[in-house]
Length: 391
Ligand SMILES: O=C(O)CCC(=O)C(=O)O
Ligand SMILES: [Fe+2]
Image (tube, rainbow, N blue to C red; front, side):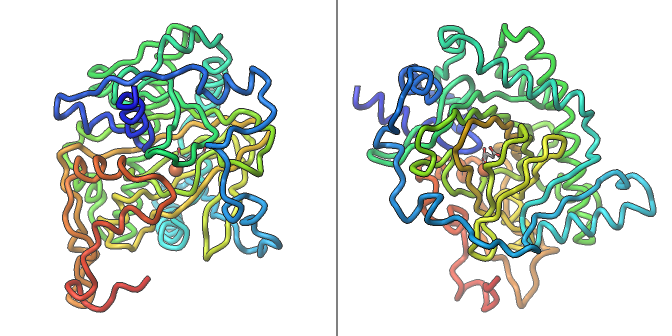
């Protein structure tokens, strides 16, 4: 029993799930999700007080860390990608994306190419799924360490704090990933088809962003994509998140502060605030635009770009109820990630040691979120990499 709990705790936490880690070794581990531990279940049963494992230390609570008098210029960039395919507009878009990734690691995009109707349908799938009776959602419970299915974010170690969120995880792209590890949702009936179409479009958007960043760094358009290994091996892991209404929102976090281990992450919000990014020591709320995507750089691009493009800490506060769709663009499992020569020089040698994505993700899943920057574990000690480690 204790062993099963420990296993489950280690397995279902990380941002981009551990699907590949165990799958590639042929060692998926059995896990079981206990319905009574789902946040939505507790809330629907009329919970009035947040259980102790969710409660944040005082100094980490939203009331203690909220930015008062946010400077007016501290707003994450909103970038209109409409001109990206036009010769005259492309330079502007590329410049804005590149600068946003250098300065913020976060930005929102509008006119991004995904039809508004498809975004609405995807959010509708998310709403309808979480509105199913608990017995029906349970049919999709995470059963193995793949992280695919209905489950939640558990503590990674005994006594660790738990996030106020339930999640449904699956591969939304590419077709290879969907076929190899499918999650067939019966209701809502349009789920599989809609989310496959959505995933394919998200994949295209991820490619566009990497093209823009490659060009921003004066590299061939395909450069960053090619560094992620075989095109077929990269994919999009999607997590539909439900942060149920919380009776004591100041005591908890929807998702505690963390940086994503992905290449990049593309998030669709439902129009409810909650997502915040840490900028110059201040928590900056991200406007909840339901027709935009929030895009953030993940650790893999930070390493490849030798810290030029930043993977930045963010968090989600709880409140009256919120849904979002997190799409993690992941490299091929066998891909070795290392700073690309273009981002290094004799005065700024590689700041990270090469690391196989499989090694990265396996280690990432063992550490609790919010405890330091995981990516720092792969930094070359300063004395070996020259004297230009400062940001
Ligand atoms: O819910 C959100 O807006 C973002 C969630 C997030 O940061 C994550 O899934 O890594
Ligand atoms: Fe995140």
